[in-house]
Amino acid sequence: MPPVGKRHYMRVRADMPPGHVRTPAYLRGKTGWVERVLGPFPNPEQLAYGHQGENLSLMRVRFTMGDIWGAAAENPQDTLDAEIYSHWLEPAEPPHAT
Amino acid sequence: MPHDHHDHLSPSGHPYRPDNDQPLTYWQQMEIAVREILIAKGITTAAEINAQIDAMDARNPAHGAAVVARAWTDPAFRDDLMADASAASAAMGFDIGPMKLIAVENTAEVHNVIVCTLCSCYPRNLLGLPPDWYKSRAYRSRTVKEPRKVLAEFGVTLPEDVTVRVHDSTADMRYIVIPARPADTDGWSADQLAGLVTRDSMIGTGLAKTPAALAGTETGG
Image 1 (cartoon, each protein chain N blue to C red):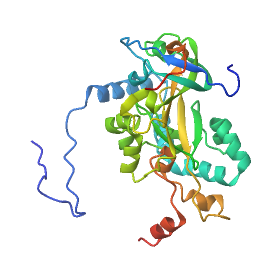
Image 2: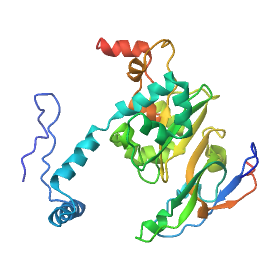
Image 3: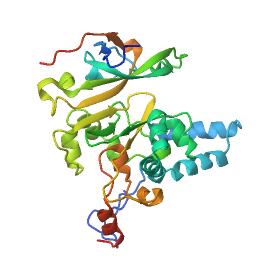
Image 4: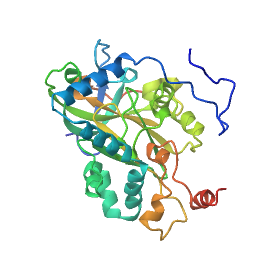
């Protein structure tokens, strides 16, 4: 667990694989911080094809609108939370909003 | 050709709907075939299927409104709801099944709104069937990019210093917004307060009604 009060930043993998993916395309390659850990859930990308789903940690990741949409953001300080499975996340440095 | 009524209005003043007499779609046929096989093989019965449909139809936003009103009047329940909304709702008698629920709370600083960009995840057990617009491509694609514009179209215009927090319900969680309790409701019972909680306020595209708006509704104004 990250120290209390310190944001644990993660980047969503930028891959665009074919098939059933439950990670929204608009968040791929974007960096946010872990809002909360939701616990293990079976991987829906395996369940979709009738396989036994491997249990993965599901995290709620919070992004700023500025980090998602850049200059096109309505209000860069507004935020978006999304549930992302851990195999789509990699540790990251805080993004430097431009 | 079916006779249609493009140029005519029904006695209620609305246009007639076109006759629904096109052939069954592939998926409609598939649903009927699977259902009939399950019944023929004794795995389920027509009565059980009807009972499930009735149970689904019985779910409606009044359940969610009762949860919100209790959160407004019972601080211990509010804390339980924020910590584990599935367990707190189940403790109130709303069986939410295997669904995992997260409650998010509107405050003077934060306004929450729910969307599901990948499909149309919705807390049906507490709010009933979702409105058609919730499933539309326009709502799903625009709410994550220009939530303030979308909210303004629903009549909710927020000051710049209120943070908008969009929740994209992409996976295993369902969400309910706990709207801010309206002013001038001191001393109201949970039952009275529940009358102020709208479906849209629990999605975040609306606010709870004010006592004045409720009075206007009751007099038909």
